[in-house]
Image 1 (cartoon, helix red, strand yellow):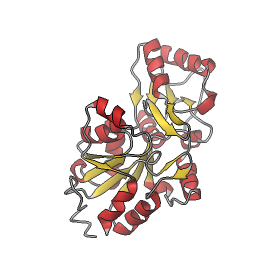
Image 2: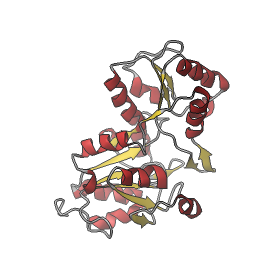
Image 3: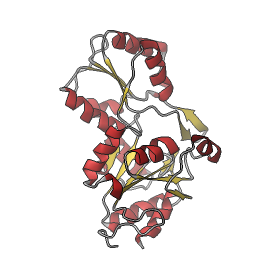
Length: 266
């Protein structure tokens, strides 16, 4: 394809770079979704700048790449921009603060450069801990924020899609700590402008030339649109037409699945 000309798809004229969500777009419950492999192959052959942009906070970038490859989806670590990665960049800007990580053991690998403390942290980093959430860790985070620590949320998602259906996401814990401490969390994952600015820097493109493809009408589509990009919604993962209708958000393009993008590069 002519990379300079951009993507030849309705509603995406002038688009020369893509951000693609992972969970709910490429796979659900460790199983690839229809067209995911074809989409990745087409992207690699196209020469178009792209990154896989995810709010996954349970796995390090290395582990996520490994798990995707095990599913038959060839995604390199350097092609992934995750919420934990965005948090690391933000923490570096603060000057190497001491952190209290509310993260899975695997995701903590991305934060190995930072000193950790349960009693004297400068920043509480709130991600996903799966079934390890309990009153003890939440109360510890509460006390640290009350003592002056900043609350850094990797994202504030409401729910995500798993094989059993929609699952509660970490936004409930973020909101609870905000309510209890009268503090507002700094959010670095989608839909925060910080995340999208970081992604645009890596692509080397202005927002008007980039489209975000995802299954979350708020974090993916609205987040991208608010940052000056196009927002493309796929009807997979957490997509529910009734939920989309209640948001009042209109995607620039609606796709049956991510495999549709392979046709853009033929």
